[in-house]
Amino acid sequence: MASRKPTPSLIAEFPVTKIDFVKGNRRLAREKVLQILAACETSGIDWRSIYTHVIMREFSFDPEEERGKPEKLMTPAEIDEFEADTAIRWEQDEVEFMRTLLIASNDVRDYADPLVEKYSQNWDYDRIAILDRILLRMAIAELITFPEIPVKVTVNETLEIAKLYSTDRSNAFINGIMDSVIEEMTKEGKFQKTGRGLL
Image 1 (spheres, rainbow, N blue to C red):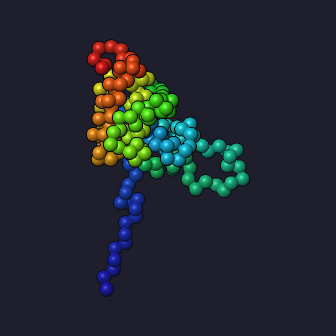
Image 2: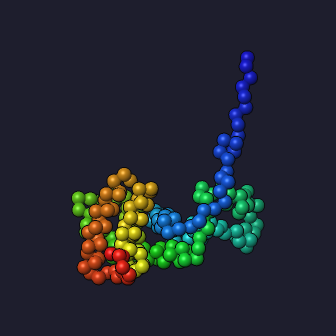
Image 3: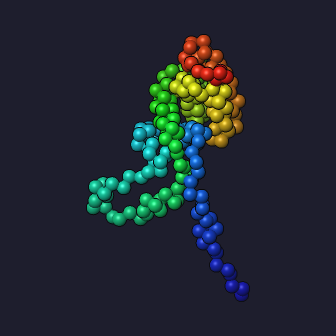
């Protein structure tokens, strides 16, 4: 009877990435804001409770909280190593962009959601993908809050992120809604863009 070769360990088959970090950019910043808003939408948690973990991959290991509890199975460094995402090295202006967009996306909700619903003809608003609703909210917040970002950039970034994270139909849906939303917002004077070529 032939002897069977031992199965290689999972670690050998799936080595941990050798990439220590990637450089942050606005696209990644928008993706992180989407992750936080989606987590809040589906779980009801406050964004402040997960912000530092999602953005900075920070964990709370307060010795006072852990007093009298069994020793942790993994150290912060080990948890960091097993994180699904590669660490992102952010510049301060990108961190400010994320925080501002996150707060603005929450603040604009009462304005953005009815506006999106208004132009979601032939769609049951409650059945629109959660990520699509959040992306539209983020886009509207970005249009209002960042006068230096061209409208085309906001729309294109929203569509590219939708391709990555949402449904096959999301791109066409979001694009159609954004056309109508931008037209109405422009008439209302809801956002002002400074500089040439920003509209």
